[in-house]
Length: 328
Ligand SMILES: [Ca+2]
Ligand SMILES: [Ca+2]
Image 1 (cartoon, rainbow, N blue to C red):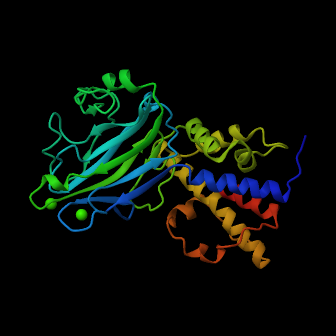
Image 2: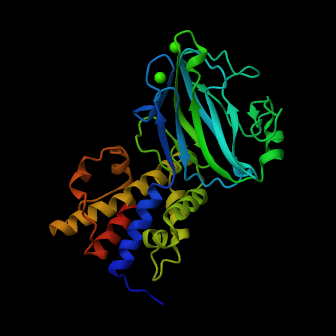
Image 3: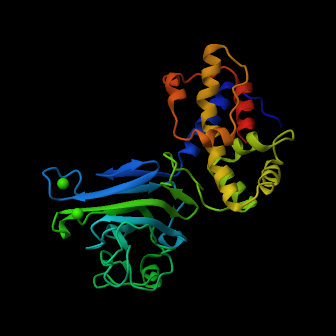
């Protein structure tokens, strides 16, 4: 049975789409700064303030459930000052144990000391899941297990719920000048990539290669089934949406192109919320087209959203639907 498009339904859809585009987020903390998508993490224990004693980023919306559900964990990092030392930089995976939340540390840099990182070059960690060189430290969960392989860590905590994933730099204290700086980019956690150069708004799938079906599965999961059908479906109730999506994705040249398209589509769709609201507010329905390509070129440019604040009403479901369909 066809459901009429009501104002409430459209607002609900807009909310779903807006939250979908924000689903995977990397939030910097402490003394972290971000430039052109790249994160700079400082640990300065030599000055008076404590806010910059540690830096990092917290990652949410990755779809990770249990520890064993983490299939991909990697980053590129560049130690500009002075070295890897004292367990920093590291990933930190918080798991819920019977005696409360505990952290599993995953150290970056060369085993076994995790110091001696070449300075001022980008180092690729590779996928740390599966590593056998003892960089998993589960000693918060079980004493004496600070040098564990992935398999050993997974045997201990694999079934536990993950309640947080972060990347941390906090060893300023270990150096003569009491300061450590590490740059970070292309942090990958399962299907999500964070802090990709050139972007200021990391989103799901950014820079991560995808087959046509993978791309469409991610879009459907991130947008929600209803929004996905509205965006891609062409028959009466949008039931052919998945097939239409796969056909569209299959025409792209590479897995990377598809992954980029997923990010572009999600961001473009999210902007439909503000743009169609803006049109309705000003009585304009002339074609201000949003395309994934245009949107990607202007990623991070929020100037055109400045007059949208505080406008939460939508008067035209039709223009919103048209915008969503343009976005894909
Ligand atoms: Ca400080
Ligand atoms: Ca230093």
